[in-house]
Image 1 (cartoon, rainbow, N blue to C red):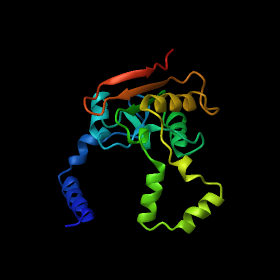
Image 2 (cartoon, rainbow, N blue to C red):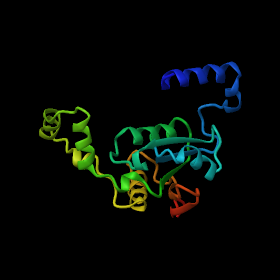
Image 3 (tube, rainbow, N blue to C red):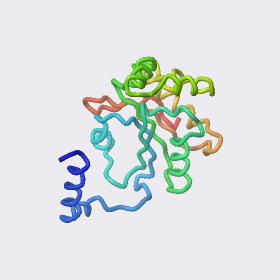
Image 4 (cartoon, rainbow, N blue to C red):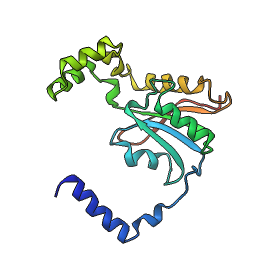
Length: 186
C-alpha cells in the first residue's frame, strides 16, 4: 500500500467508527489565541500539550521557523483573519530550539533544487526578475532572534490594533519547556 492508500484506509476507519466526535468544535478559538509556530515535526503534538491546548482552543499557523518574512504575506493575512474575523485576542509567536531555519544553508538548498531537476535557466530567470533565492531562503542567526523579529513585525503591523498583546516564546523541542522571550502585556 502506498502513502495515499494508507491514509485513506485509516480515514475510512476513522469516519466509520466516529473517532472524529471527540474533536468537534467550531471555527472560533475557545481560548481566543492565534499562534504562529514552526512546521517542525517535533511540535505537532508537543506544542499543544506544552501549552495546554486542545482541539478548538487556538488558531495555529505553521511555517518554516515561525518567521514572518513578509508583512503582507499569507501568514500575516492568516493572523489578520484570526483577529478580526475569528475573534482571537492575543498572538503568540513560538519558535523552538534546534530549528532548521537557524542553520539553513541557502546555497545547499539551491544545489539540491538543481539535483532534483530545477534548471539553471529557471534559477537565472528568477535572479534576473529580482528574486534573490539566497535571501528568500535565508533563515535567522538563532531561534530567539527569529522570535524577536517576528514579534516586532506583528506588533508594529499597521493593520493590527496597537493594544493587541503579542507574546514571544521559545519551546524546547525535546522537553516542551517554554521560555518567555517577550511578554506582550508589558
